[in-house]
Image (cartoon, one colour):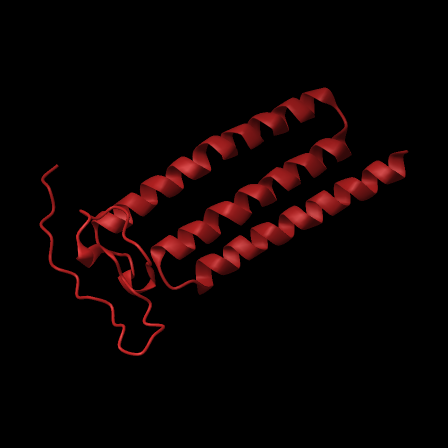
Length: 136
C-alpha cells in the first residue's frame, strides 16, 4: 500500500513542479502584463495545490496535512485577488497592449473600446483616444 501512495505522491509533486515551471516560463516569455498575470496565476496555483497534495500524501500525518491545507487555502484566496488588482492597475496605467484585446470590457462602451486583431485585410485597430485619469 505504501508504494502506491509513494507513486501517487511523486506524480503529484512532479506535475506540480512542471506547472510551476510553466508559470515561470510564461512570466518570462509572454508579451504584456495581462498575459504574464494569467501565466503567473493559473498554472502556478494548480502547481502549488498539486505539490501540497503530494506532500500531504507523502508525509501522511494529520498535523502536516492541516498545515498544507492552510497553505493551499491561502493560495486559493490570495492569488486571484492579487491578479485582479494587478490587472486593474495595469489597465488604469495603460500598460496593456490593446492590439491583443478583442473587447475592452472596462471601457465606456463606445466603438473605440472594440479592438480588432486585424485578421481580415483592411481591419486595423482603432486609435485609442487619450483619457484623463480620475483623481484618487
